[in-house]
Length: 286
Image (cartoon, rainbow, N blue to C red; front, side, top):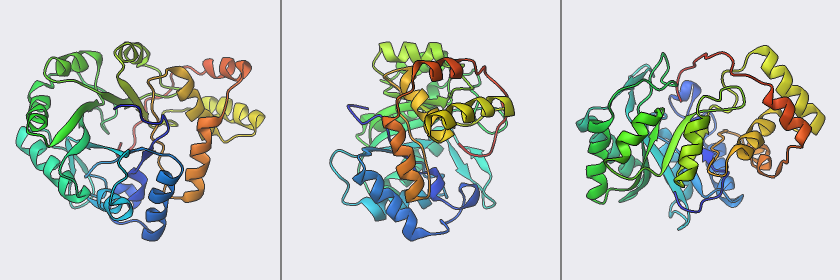
């Protein structure tokens, strides 16, 4: 993904409740996007199934003409039905159609980065073994046509990353990883050795009450919010980790961005290290 700032922005929450429909406050959504760029965000994570189409259209309205340094990362592999359900859509023809939807709604001729969302489990958060060759190959063909610059993967395991890499270069992997859900540590190290970005989603997802209590305690001692501590912890783990916290509020955006400057002392890191992987609860969406 090149030399982007480690703190990016995730656009999912700009859509309506359940990541479906228009935002409650369209003007605030536009302000959030413009403020993010003003604060130094140079990569935005989105998907045309957010809304659907809503977040990409907001990004286009707020930020075109796009700053030269801005990298927009989108995902394909899912669609929404008319009630907002998340449906897998990973046949080659479906992926091609989704790429063209992203191009049109973002208003670009070439997509900077496209992540193939593989996923599994009840809400798509858990990698499920299986071949990605046909799916990834369809996107690699679009890359060869000049419609995509770079390719990535989302919700995959190490074997699937290796399989994709045999087809085309992989520049980023986006999986569920946080202070309480650390199953990807070997994968993160492997990607770091290859200079491949790792982008964790759901930074506060999968916590049980005891784990939340530990995080709350550390945050209170540091005079920070639990989310800021969780984000700072992620930045501390590996230099190839990039963050994409999302919000629909300018005030919360500023709080999230402040996490980039939060330094965690040794005693805080030791306490957070005691949080073991907890529940594997899912929630709809990304």
